Image (cartoon, rainbow, N blue to C red; front, top):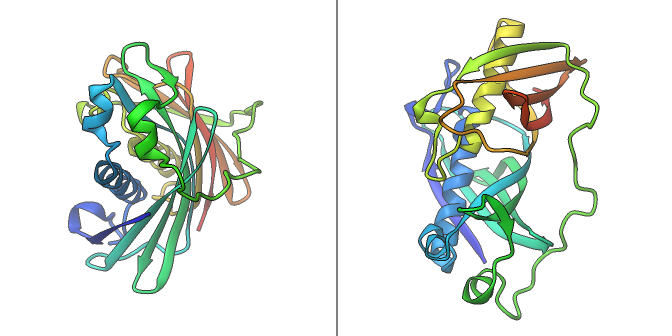
Length: 241
């Protein structure tokens, strides 16, 4: 079952070039996923009743064109397969019939007390993956960030109260803001990313006053790590338009 979220690009969601921000695009993905899950009976309310919450583990995004201010979009999302603790979700963003972005994401069900991933069971599992539902196979060549990161440059960024979401940690879309800010300070101009791949390892909470974004560049691409103190919270790689 697909879910479609219509959206007109508003002034609050664009950058100085009047194009949709990367973080705004990621927030649209999140909104579509939340509404889809709620419509299917495994949304925030149902998860909270079981002491659970959804947490994004990995995102692999490609942008073909950033939509402009006041363009009409459709964000289409559908469930993918599952593998162990992992549940997959796909996204497409369309302007009319034009595909402007696509992504595959990996999610965990998190025990909100232990902060550990757990399997969805019982009624929630039946709603998430009902019997007879045909789903695509999970990606066989899942991307992973490099294990040996050769840091070339880093920059501290102050966290804000507004970065924290309903799971009491920095929202996944805010990591893109941290990354773009670091690249902009390094290059002297705000970047436009074509591909964005990130894996989340540890959450960042309100008690973290600042994060450190480390960068390593190779031609038209960057590898990055985002750390809270000595803990690597996320790592990934991006390429520029």
